[in-house]
Amino acid sequence: MDDLEASIVEALGRRGAVLHDAYRGPWVGIAPKTGVGVSFKPEVTIDSETLRLLGAIPRPRLIWISLAHTVLATDLAPLRDYDLRALALNNTNFIDKGRVLPELKNLRWLNLYCTQIADTDIRGLAQLPQLEQLFVGGTNVTHEGVRELAQCKTLKYLDLEASKITDEVLKAVSVLEDLEGLNIAGSMAEVSDEGVNALLAMRHLRLLGFHPPPSISAAAVERLRSIPGLNFIHGGCAGLFRPKDFKVYFF
Image (tube, rainbow, N blue to C red; front, side, top):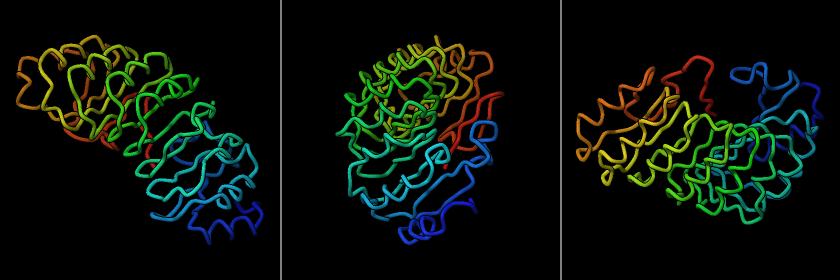
């Protein structure tokens, strides 16, 4: 990052940005060695000037952006011009009015936890050709939105933590037969054995995060355990398990 224009780095720093070497850690072999990632301090306001400064970083170098826990005071349309592999918008006031996200064709990792997205937004996300990991817990996404994700053939990890999980949601999830990781820790009071049994079709599942509610029988849980290679995490999945050739990346 030493060769980036000093004025850009300084200006972003004054706006609460922290620049990172994006090629380290989980991005080894994915991001170029000149890759840059940018995160922002919590509660910083993201305005049009902030996005302009981010756009001044050469396009192939800006690999990921985390706007988590910031206040979005401008439309994110300029992101269309970035070559992003990962984007964190969790815990923000983000609403995709301009349908920006479906145009970020290189995204592999997208965190929309606790945003205002809904089922109508999921159809566009399902068209992202390289999306591997998606976090949509704590949103207005229902079983109808989850069902749309069946079109996303590259999706390997889906996080629905803190969502209202019902039998209909689990039936919709079960259509995603190629998923390797699933986090459904959250409100599962309305889940029955019927919903749990639907997950038995997911023969590639290697990680499952959930809290079995009293409404689920021990027999149903044991049937889930019969899935070869499945690891249970009683709670969130972050940092607890790494199946072979599969990593869950967190910022």
